[in-house]
Length: 371
Ligand code: SF4
Image (cartoon, rainbow, N blue to C red; front, top):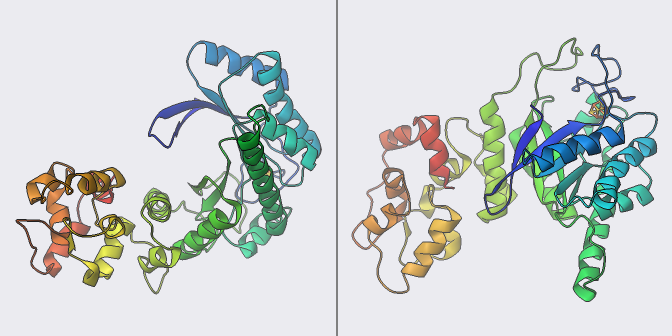
């Protein structure tokens, strides 16, 4: 318990000790089990206890780093000081070289955020909910403009740090793994289209490395303003896939939104959004694997970035056949309707084939999206 798995861009799995400094909080966010009015037992680590725990797990190879967050105790500055103290002590007193991700508090003194960035690899500020109205309703002590102001300041500090490192090798790092945020899904009435739009704006404005989506989970003694049920976990998964489409496959946010239902604004749960987009814009297919540009190949459901790069490299030397593409994918039956190869040209995708594509079990659907 308490050890989570994060994934590096190269696919490596990193184990992190993910804990709260304390579950006490002076705020009263409706969706949070640790809110002030919640009837839970409270506990708190000292900074030294977190340092000792991290080091003992690290030395035993249980973890490669620490992901530390906290409820707000006393004041934003006091809480941030405690978080910074953990990171400082790990780095300066113990020469800790593992990964550190610190949650930062938007209202904290910028000097404390500056110190956090000197010791942590990544900093994050949670945007919490996709809309300002949702935040005002469910987390009245938080403010979307204040959160965005803090993200903007972080972006400046990260970019200044990168610039300084380019000029002087001895310049100190500032959050070299960038900043990220988290959005709760299903606690308010925001649609997937709203969430995709919000995530895209945050990526553009603040150069975030990641937006994490977290399905709302009902809590004991919940406030009456919250939904009674959790959203389907598949919804969270589809949002991660839509995020992937924008970051790695070159889709514009409005294109991802076009994969959503025009009336409800929700992404389909029974197929990945890349396939949904392909079925909605059938006139863009089939794509000729021997001629099409990279951008068009990346839109073929089931072709991932690595497969596309290998197609581009191989076709310099010979014309590719369907069997060549089959070697790059485990789902050639699903790919076939969307591509042309030297020895293959599909007939128009029939409605019953579309139904078959939709109704595949979950494991195959995920594979369709392309790793
Ligand atoms: S500030 Fe954080 S810990 Fe406190 S109630 Fe809100 S979400 Fe929960």
